[in-house]
Amino acid sequence: MLRTEPLDFVQVDYAFDDREAGRRILPLAADLGIAVVVNRPFGGGGLPKRIGDRPLPAWAAEIGATGWAQVLLKFVPSHPAVTCVIPGTADPRHMAENVAAGCGLLRDPTFWSSRVDTMPT
Image (cartoon, rainbow, N blue to C red; front, top):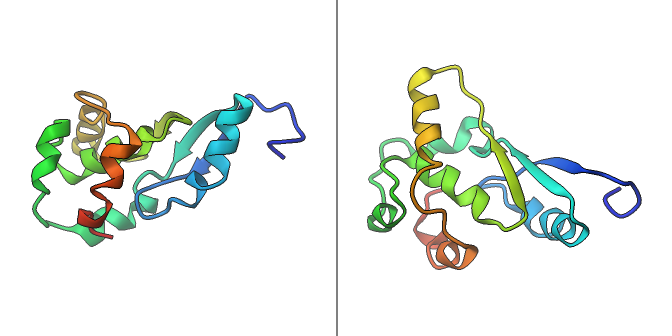
């Protein structure tokens, strides 16, 4: 559909534990100039629950992340095709943490590629 229809944007699931869209859809959208809106940046909420209270990796400080939600949200727009990320929450504390993820450094994919093995899934 990306190749045959005149789309302005596409909305996809993309998260640290669900990177399939990053293999085909995101590069194709970038090549075609189609904006990408990412939903489910926490993998539907399951990833933060699986991570639980594990300590942040030392490199989280390099990107100004003070919690796992910020780390996970900073990962998603590191893909150059991602235009916008729409995490969902009804909890004001979570919303504040999500907003904080937009502050500080957003690193490129090379930063993340060397840290993928240190991320819990």
